[in-house]
Structure formats: C-alpha cells, structure tokens
Amino acid sequence: MMKKSSNTSSTTSNSKMDETPNIKVVRLQSGEDVIADILSDNDNTILHNPMVVLLKRSGKGSVMMMVPWLPVELISDNIATVNNSEIVTYTNPKDSLVEYYLNMVHEIGKEIQYSDEMIKQQNKAYKGNLDSETYVDDYDEDISTMDELLDKFNIPKDKKRIH
Image: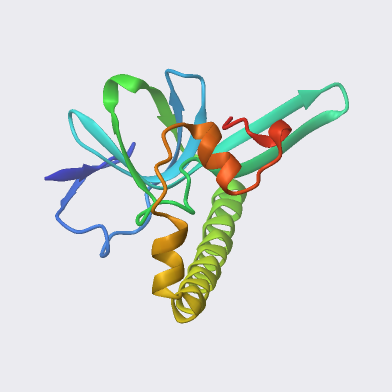
C-alpha cells in the first residue's frame, strides 16, 4: 500500500485515480531534478509523468526547459519506480511551475497519442502491401554481423555507428 507524501499530512490510498496530484520536484543522487506526481512508501517512490527540469543560469538570467525523463515514445506507461535511497530530497514547486508541468504533460500526451496512431496506420499499410513470398525471399539469408545487416539495408559506411 502506497502513502501519499505531503509536508502537511499523509493519506493512504489504493488508487492513484481518485487522488489529487501530489506534484513535487525530486532531486536525485545523480543530480537530476525531476518534477512528477509522486506516491511514496518506506522503500520506493513512484513517479507519474516524470519530467526532468533543466536550468541554465548565466549573468543574463536563467533559462528553464522541461523534457520527459523517460523515453515516452517507447513505453506503455509514463511511470517510474525509484528506490528512496536514490532520492536526496523533494520539495514543493512554485504554482507557476506546476501549471507549466501540467501543460507539458498534456501536450506530450497528445503527441504520443498522435504518434501511436501514425504507427498503427503505417503498420496497417505495411501489412497490406506485404507479399509473403517476397518477405521470405528477402530475409532468408544468414546475417551474422551488424555490418552485414547495415549493408543489407544499403546504409552508407559513415552512418553505420549505432550510437
């Protein structure tokens, strides 16, 4: 059972859906600052829709940027569980930061939904155009190295780096 973390009170809940957001800025051992809707117990903290906050300070002022902490394009749920030993501290964000965070979460959700629809359409078109004989003939070769695989797809030599 997870407890909702709060500076003023703690409540127990079985479902995240019927709770009000508990948005905190979390400082991790790695030095990253992550803003998320959190649930915490004695061992772990669950971060819902975590976004890393990037802050650049200079003599001319500060610039802030917020990006998803997880690869949201690749995962089904934008939720991470972090061991509490990885957390240095967490604190309440300013109201304006909470508003910005909620807007960003909403916008990213729309983008993910749009990209999911595009992938579904592309898969449907691909399957509709797939000739099973061609598919089997094209991929029955034995490919034993990454270079052979890249050559198979005609990727130029200077673009063969994975990272």
